[in-house]
Image (tube, rainbow, N blue to C red; front, side, top):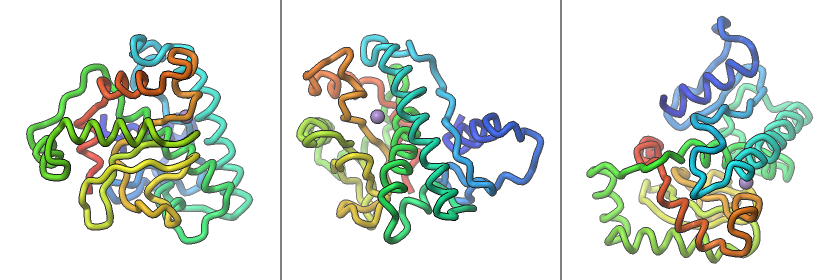
Length: 233
Ligand code: MN3
């Protein structure tokens, strides 16, 4: 199931509107959730909480999805209602000028985790075409993985490491603080995020404690590279 279908389905399920044609899903490949009534929903995962026990323990998965991500979803909906934001995709909301702190934190939290869950799978493999793009952008796969690992390891405090396309569609790596992401105008590394690694302690602390590097090394083994590639524009 592609991302659009995945998120469309989760939105439909949560709203109980399966038969209604009034849900407008964004026309662009990159739009993931655009609802006429502006109610964003927690996406249902394509796998169980125990899908990757050697990488992320089930308890962490459960708390991360059902508590943290769910919390961002509810607070995003409340923020949208308060600020009269409607008929917009999450990408449109986050990429607008001068977003409020509330939208930045909760909309960012909502979007970032949707991306994170969507790009995990047991034993993903890069296509030859995507691998060529990585080689062109980074020189070698090793350099790519080193740069991504380094961005994730050295992000001070809570935040995310990203593989994204800059505004010239070049593949780049960066990290951002808190729930910021490259869609946001105030983020200097602005562009289209295609892979996000959550390096908040809640993403790994139960299993790894202070060993963030080990979590990063392991999570890079369960990336769904086809999904990552499909998010390129
Ligand atoms: Mn998180």
